[in-house]
Length: 391
Image (tube, rainbow, N blue to C red; front, side, top):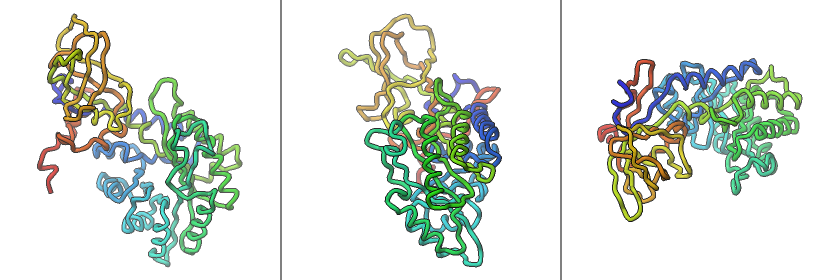
């Protein structure tokens, strides 16, 4: 099957690119840390076929709800290869994960209470999420209006220490690690340098002896003029070393999502209609902005055009729109470009992160997904039907 034969709209997974991204991140970690793991952020893209690949490549699964926990197990991740974060845990999976050696990072006070239900005859380890106010820790990297965070426990107001003390009252439970995830505006190296320094400040102040530090995610992926995986890892390593941490005795966990899965995915849509309305040339596609930009924030896309034939007529302005009934389902405008015609196709690149998991079941169901191989393309998920939706 060739690209021209694919039924649109559809996502396309380039498995070679996915493998390359994972192996490159692993090489970076191997160059600095003897004990580490990649906890892939399932929420970024939860396509089961891809999750199975990541498991085979030795990644752990980073999950943030009881449903994601179940999905990780369903696709083959061992319980001890799960990093369990966030406030959406339920009691059953929370306790199950701890009992089976998962990296469980406490994010709510109720989780601390649940620790009392563990078998007192056995010993367990948990981690805890630290609240990170980038406005104070790394102000130049904070998003305007979002410098503070609503997650984790605050060291500044004493709630982190209070939570740790309550954990330590459970004599069979040890605090094993700190979770330090924080999304930033810049995704710069400076963010991770300052987060590591803040972590060491907490460790020294509270006299903690930890088994691991979970630095979280928020990294750039394969993008020109952006930090590389190696540069991120080197920054984390040097920042911990400068503060006197013996990195040989502590596991380092990273939680990339976008950095690994954005670039291996593309989205293919076809033009199904063109019309003139007022002064606007409207180009209607069978895809939607929901598919490639569910936050409706992007100004433009990495894209290319596949034309059925060469077009010599240039148009001053063409507005490319989606197939939904939303008036604002507008993707982009072409200025002074050859006319697009029915049957022409648009290929959007680098759309693997926070697209498929955020695309709503609005008007039409989830699109097909193809796998790009050396010999062409093969389908790995059919388009959803009514039978997939109904229970």
